[in-house]
Length: 333
Image (cartoon, rainbow, N blue to C red; front, side, top):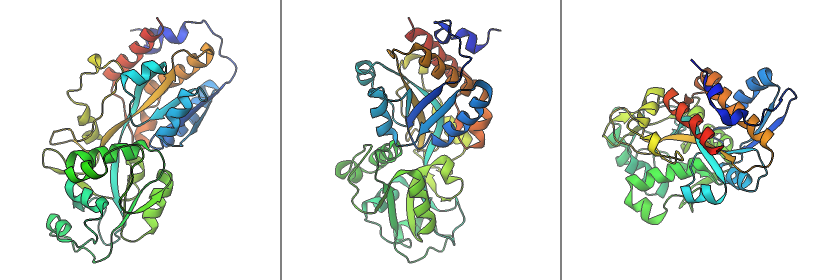
């Protein structure tokens, strides 16, 4: 069987010698930052190339790739076909993750508190102000909830996580959709703003009564909540429930992979499942650098799966990887 790397002729179009190390720069999603750092460390050991990734948020990463100031970008929000064509960009998913509500309530076991989408929206709208509010206690009759204020925490920067979280809230709450909507940056009605996932998660960990939203890998070390999914089941985020969100997606007929996985129906689906996407300039003058970038991603798909699992990401399934790499080849023609 021919290896996938051998099948990706785009990587070898220019018959390049890449014996000397190169610095490959990337920027964007904080969701993807730990993954790029781990992949980069291991990739350097086998290739010599240095991956420098700056987790500045999805929106800023897209600005940088459009300005040709980085070799690749990453965003948790895919661009539409028009925007990709206008800016000569190729996009493809590199891993599956999730957005997870997290709380600071020491007396409650992690993963035990149940929330519905409408209740979560009302918390972030400021309608539900205390943890022992009847709307929350009705969902958790077996948990003694404290009569303390809810401290809402959200992102201040241009964030794909914010876009995904507010997209979900817009789907489950007409009030949220009409008053706030969804975007990389929104005008939050209440709460405390923090820049980046690290600042937000640190604040939630330190502030009693706080609630925020973080990526799946951060949530592993925090008190996360259950959510009721679109099919009415209360679920916790898990590898299996993230993978199920890809069920029935026709990737072959989605040329630029621009699909969201938010709030899909299914008993075993986490409603805030997300993918994170890489972006490369198709018309980049430095073809050597383009080759190196794609070799890095091919290595990541082939050799970086276990590393992804260790960091609580879900690797892209083999069938989808084959489609992605065939698109690399088609973009070279």
